[in-house]
Image 1 (cartoon, one colour):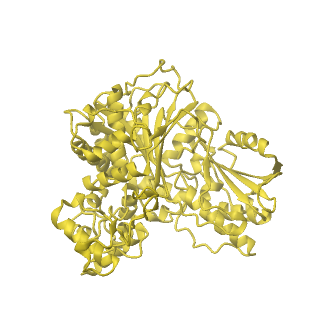
Image 2 (spheres, one colour):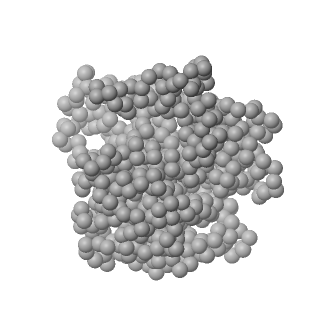
Image 3 (cartoon, helix red, strand yellow):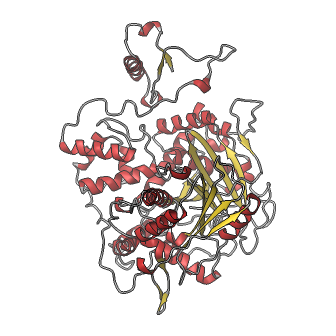
Amino acid sequence: MVPQTDAPLAGKSGGPAVADAIWESLAARLPSHMVPSALVVLERLPLTVNGKVDRAALPEPDHASGAGAGRMPATAREELMCSVFAQVLGLPRVGVEDDFFALGGHSLLAVRLVSRIRAVLGVEISVRTVFEAPTAAGLTRRLAQPGAPARPAVVAMPRPRELPMSHAQSRLWFLDRLEGPNHMYNICLRLRLSGHLDTAALRAALADVVARHESLRTTFPLVGDQPSQRVQPVEEVAIELPVIAVGAEELEERLGRLAVHAFDLAAELPLRTDLFRLTHGESPDGEEWVLSVVLHHIAGDGWSMGPLWRDMSEAYAARCAGRTPDWEPLPVQYADYTLWQRALLGDADDPGSVLARQVAYWKARLRGAPQELALPVDRPRPAVAGRRAGWVPLRIPAEVYARLTELARGQGVTMFMLLHAAVAVLLSKSGAGRDIVIGSPVAGRLDQALDNLVGFFANTLVLRTDLSGDPDFVELLDRVRATCLEAFEHQDVPFERLVEELAPARSMARPPLFQVLLAVQNNPRRCRGCPVCGWPKNPQDRCRPGSTWTSRSTSVVTKQGRPSAWTAGSCSRPSSSTSPPWRRWRPGWCGSWRRSPPTPPCRSTASTCSTARNGSGCSGSGTTPPARCRT
């Protein structure tokens, strides 16, 4: 923040001119990673009653405000590349020299950028290339070099008589047959509505959404000795939406019972909806509702919640207006993806197939990896993993998050990579050694045709981090970046197939390959909301504690620039002491890397942080927050 009245800048007129002058001056004197990504010019600094700068009153910097400045595209390919950048980043324009990550890009958006470039320009680039050349000009120059042909696009395909399952679906189907129908893979959501609700329009909207997405009306019968997908015809699907009047005290019990609904995958649609009317609502007209949606994971994932709620909102608004939704037809359905996936991977016996090449990479990468992280716990691991889970919430203050963001940009990594490095160090300092294996989910939507589909596309990657040699934090970030980029380039192998190929020692006490999972919740939320009946933009994701399948997980969510992190430890009898590594996490410790990143992280001190001793305001408690949905 720079007051516009500073004397050296008095000759400059207008905020943008002042900001440009400061930026040029800093760029001429400082390394690129130390130059601010955004400048805000103010007439005067806001002050508190004590005469100090009122940081809470400072405006949020607009990191994209300078996007599109600089030289114009010199070629048609550069112009197309700028257009692709702008579309993926959600900006009106992007200049040829604008940095993708400085404008808000991250790993998930980099994957979408690769997909969009493939669709628009018909060429194939890797996520690594985006990191190495993060500007439109840089990527255009890379495209001029010989490269691999673009992978085949996902298109509508002729349907065989019996539709196979995707690899991810096959795993869930097998677990369902092995354990019997249960609720462990239910995705449970609730939507609170206030005001008048047209229940007939809502029921019709649900029918519209189920008709639009084949995955929501698919059953999974056994045909001969092979499981298959069977898409039910629209005219044979009856959408049930029971309307139940309940009191506030009874609502949670009812929702809890719905959350543990056990789907019969062979005969039952993987979606259940119920509508509750609160008998003592607090809205002005007395009408308050809760819509419960329970979706089996075999038919959806975290990303799917965006298209699902957006389509629901648009369909309800259309039905209230007395018309059907005016949607663009979906280019493909989930069954098309299943056929495409099997064709793309090829045969494992063919050494030239995608499956064989990527499996060879993972075998080499994970050779000799520890089967289990040796973490100190307060009781022996049970012979059979329990289904209950405990939650240990932790919040990272916005100012610490801002410093970490600056560090990530300066070192050329994403926030996920920075958090990955932090979790690896935390586990190592907790007794897990120097060879750390962490799992991480990826969206798995490598083709833009899949962006608007409801379906189970998510995959899980196994990330192995080498902490040997006592690397400083800068070197560790380099290692983590290389690990992540290589993993992104070999993410086509389904996790289930990887476990089958690697054949690790199996145990009922722990998951195979890794026991810690790091998930950054940055799925796009594109529900625009509906003015009728207070339809919210972002419905709440809820599920019962214990539906997570990993031993420990970490998720980070950013809301309105205010980051918050939650960590969860799964155990047979949860207690606040069962997850000691997460208890040692301190935002102040992370913030120290921003001030002196070369310090070897495995020798740094995870010191205790408290609001009384410093201004970081970190917090952690053993209280159980509302359970968040596994995606």
